[in-house]
Length: 227
Image (cartoon, rainbow, N blue to C red; front, side, top):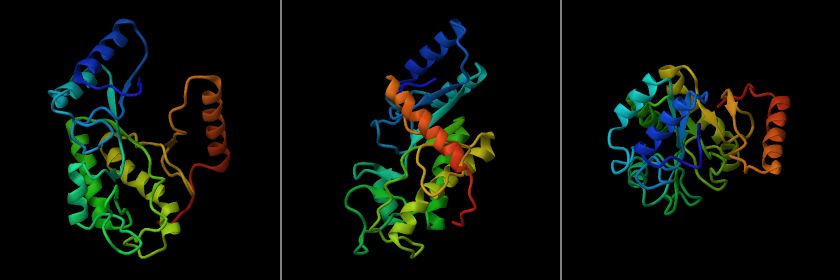
């Protein structure tokens, strides 16, 4: 059960309670961009001002038959506290001139150390009781960037969603069995569920998602791509 976002522990608990009272079948509650202190600024921490005890909330929801899905993304705004850390650890895609980015920092998932760092951020949330993640974005890896793999930007731009989906799915699958819900897709998609982004409610939005799902199915969801 999801919406644009749930913004507080109180709201999540109220929705979960109403679903059970009204006997509406549901086993997943998705928290989109509002679970961090600053919406859309993913730092892998629940907002302390709106989610007062996330571990207890997650445990209570699980006891009630719900698992929690969290939105996240691999880009860090300059105001994100992880922006500086990622740059200092040399975990980001560099500019065409070999300099660190001054705007959004994109994690260089062709670098094993950066991949490990990202996995650890997700693993910490899984340990608290999170059930699954939405692997949002991933399609904006810079074409002109310099990557640790030393391969061209076009090559890495196309492979980035695959690397990203693999990084998110790995720790999730080990911890909770279902991997991740993936929004991005490029050369191929190796996670079991790939989305076509959240559609608007009119018929055109539903038609667009149906068409995207059909194309994904006919194209084949798995491909032997070497990363």
